[in-house]
Length: 163
Image 1: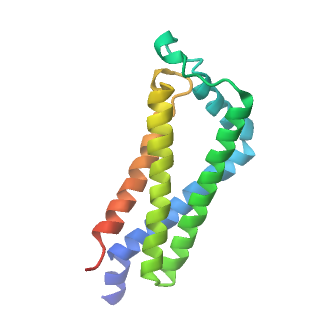
Image 2: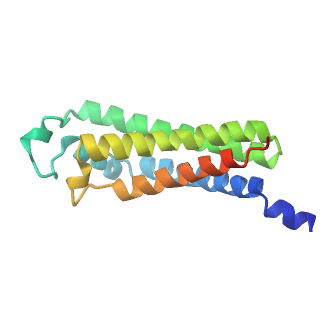
Image 3: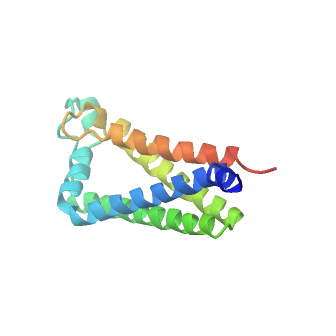
């Protein structure tokens, strides 16, 4: 019965979600590095706004500088890599039963994920660069998925905090 209580505990659920998030973010980084040009093209088209409705009221926001696109894309990859490492460190802390450290690391990693996918992709990509208008380069569904996973992790983590 103790094993069942431990496996079914909020900490076990958070540990599993932390591990899944670390794995996922690691795979995202791997994909962005090994398929660099395809994923860079995504950032390039979103910034260029070249597949949106073409309204002059929004297209003035477009960024077409290859240097700016490359820097932005490299910063995204770096942010994702740090997020993956923070989540991996959180997983290790959970497995070693260092709860306070694990909570801090998991919370930091999920917050980084929320900032990237909610702030970066949904708010800036989706609204500033009107990515929602593109039939070809619209990543809002994937961004929302990542935002929700991270938000649920944060909610579960902070709702399970012992008093």
